[in-house]
Structures are given as C-alpha cells and as structure tokens.
Image (cartoon, rainbow, N blue to C red; front, side):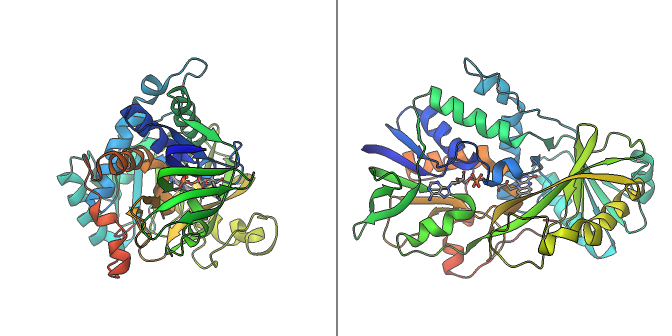
Amino acid sequence: MKCDVAIVGGGIIGSAAAFFLAVAGSAGRIVVIEPDSTYARAATPAGAGGVRRLMSRPENIRMSQFSLDFFAGFAETMVSDDDPADIAFRRQGYLFLTDADGVDALTQNFETQSSEGVPAELLDVDALRARFPSIGTDNVALACHSPQDGWIDPHAALMGFRKKAQSLGVEFLKDRVIALETSPTAVTGAELESGQKLQADCFINVAGAWVGEIAAMTGARLPVVPMCRVQHFWRCAHDVEPLPLVKDDSGAFFRPEGDGFAGGRPSWDIEPGFNWDVDRGYFATYFEDTVWQLLANMVPKFEEIRLERTWAGHYAQNTLDGNMIIGRYSNGHENLLTACGFSGHGIMHAPAVGRALSELVLHGEYRTIDLTRMEFDRVLENEPYAEIGIK
Ligand SMILES: Cc1cc2nc3c(=O)[nH]c(=O)nc-3n(C[C@H](O)[C@H](O)[C@H](O)COP(=O)(O)OP(=O)(O)OC[C@H]3O[C@@H](n4cnc5c(N)ncnc54)[C@H](O)[C@@H]3O)c2cc1C
C-alpha cells in the first residue's frame, strides 16, 4: 500500500494533523495508523480538557490562542453528516493561585500574556475573596484570572477531528506500526502488525506516550517518556459558586464537571512508565494521603466530599524541559516528523500543532506560528525551554 503522508498514532494530535492536511487539499493520500479506535489507553480521553493562555512562553500562548478560537468555532467548522461535533466548550475561565514564592513568576507571566493580548487580571487576596468566596486564601499571595479561557470534552474533540478528516478522505487503518524501513536519507516504509506494508513520502510520529518506541525504530532517541497521571471525580457536600479551572503552584487543579468536580495533582516523584492499576500500590492511597488536602486548601468546602472515581492516563513528558518537540528529529531522515512531549498541554495545543505539522509537510516551514524554538535542535544543544512558574 502506498500513500503520501502516513501518520503514526490517531490521538488528538494525529487526528488534528490529518484534518489540517486534508483541508489544505494538496497533501494527496493521507493514512492514519491507529490500533485502538476506542482510545482506551490513549492520553486524550483521560485529559481534563483545559484550554488556557496562562502560559509563559510566547509560542505556547500563541498556540493556545489559536486553539481557543478554533475550539470556540469547532461545532461549525467540524460538523459532518452524522455528527454535530459538540465538544462541550465552556468558557468558564482559569484561575492560578500562588504563594509568596511564586509572585514574581506569576507577575512576569502576566506581563508576557498581556503583551500577547490575553485578557487576564491579577487579583490580590481581597479581590480574590470578593470574586470567588469559596476559594481558600490561607496559602495564597496572588492570583491570576483569565475569564475567557475554559475547557472542552477532549474525547469529543478527538472524534470531531477524526470524523471530519475521514469525511475529507483520510483513511484510518486499525493497525499498529511495528517497524520502520529506512534508506540512508529517508524512512521508506512501515511494517504493520497485520503484516501489511505501507510506503509513504512522509511519516509523522505522533504516538503520544509511545513516541519513543517509534523513534527507536529508526535508531533515533527522543527524550520523551510515559508519565502516569491520575485524575479523580468527586462530589462536594456543600454548594460552591461556579468556578473556573483552578490550579495552584503545588500542581493541584480541579474544574467543575457536571454536578461534581474533576481534578487531581501530578505525582511528581513516580518513575516514568505505564501504570494502569490505580487501586494498588502507589496510587491506592494517593488521593487520601496527598491530593485531598491540597484540594481542601484551594476550596475549604472540599473537606467534605465523596470521591467517586479515579482513573489513570499517561502523558508524554519531555525530560529536557516538559515542553513540546516538533519537526524533524531522526538523523538524516528528512521525511520523518514528530510532535510530542506535551505533558499536560496536548489537548489545548492540538489545533495549532495539527496546523503546524501540515505546514511542515506541505511547505517545509511554518506559515503561521513560528515554532522553531520548539524543535529538536534544543535537545541536541541541551538548551531547555521550560515553562516558568505554574506549569
Ligand atoms: C490526567 C491527564 C490530564 C490532562 N489534562 C490536560 C488538560 O487539561 N489540557 C491539555 O491540553 N492536556 C491535558 N493532558 C495532556 C493531553 O491529554 C495529551 O497531551 C494529549 O492527549 C496528547 O495527545 P496525543 O495524540 O499526542 O496522544 P494520545 O492521545 O495518547 O494518542 C497517541 C495514539 O498513538 C497510538 N499508538 C501507540 N503506539 C502506536 C503504534 N505503534 N502504531 C500506531 N499507533 C500507535 C495510541 O493507540 C494512541 O491512540 C492531560 C493528560 C492526562 C494524562
């Protein structure tokens, strides 16, 4: 089988790339290889779906800006015959809380965000209490509120991209890449689990937490590892006013979800790797031992909650700096691209990254947001480009 562009991994990044390539109309035959159309183990459906411009690096802010607008118009852009493409977009805002140690970073980031046109506001403790009476202020020195940010249903967005891409002619193969064939200058083909061989002019490795396995197939190394992140859903015994997505500098976060709340806190000290059993070992008591108190610091009414569900997802962590790597990465293989290592930002950046990948394939350069600083060169030169302050 022969195609023009082969996309390895049909999560939100691969499906967004397929959509933007198909919409451009000049990419030829596009094939996405995705082994699991239920996405049971993919990161995308496990994510909180937060979309924010409260970031520190201009590239990340610009990607979020594009994606936010894109998600706001998603239902109109992505509608197809049998699918209204409803992604439950909620512009209910983001609220960052910091203690005294984080005031400088929050203020510096606020200035960067303002210069990028983000409508955010710094709130001192009195203003915070007046605006959001349920938020606990014992550990808070300063807050930043961006009322126009929000969240989406990430699984619905993934399916929206996928169905629209299919309606534009993209083929999704239910299969798994098990080997890549190379010449000295290019990737020439992929061997699939079914035994089928796929040749393509261009390959895009967007296999999320599995991206390193695909990289190893060409002898390349990406500094990207799977990190297990658990999330929880709980109901609170007390009424709480409508809140934005709230996050503090411990990494704890939550947002309203139906008649309850979803959130958690990344476990910073676990080893990389896959861990699906959240009822045993490290995670069995993680909520009670660590997360609950952090949530109750943010909202004292969360002292009285009922934990209803805990689930695991694995995001792809760039061990150099936690930020995305995009573009070429495999020595000499000019036709092999990636976009990976998003940590907790892959959903909010998916539209911008999908568009950027399509620009690299079709034009060999960025035509909209310049993402050169996010490329693999910084890995080779050991120049981290991490987010500053709350990640
Ligand atoms: C708990 C949690 C909360 C998060 N919250 C947010 C948030 O609020 N906002 C945000 O922006 N991001 C968030 N994220 C991060 C976000 O979920 C990811 O960055 C994003 O989903 C990555 O998308 P992806 O397409 O790269 O990966 P995935 O969705 O994991 O897709 C990768 C796909 O590759 C496929 N694959 C694997 N191996 C192969 C192979 N050999 N051949 C072919 N295909 C293969 C897999 O089956 C999978 O479907 C969160 C993540 C977690 C875990």
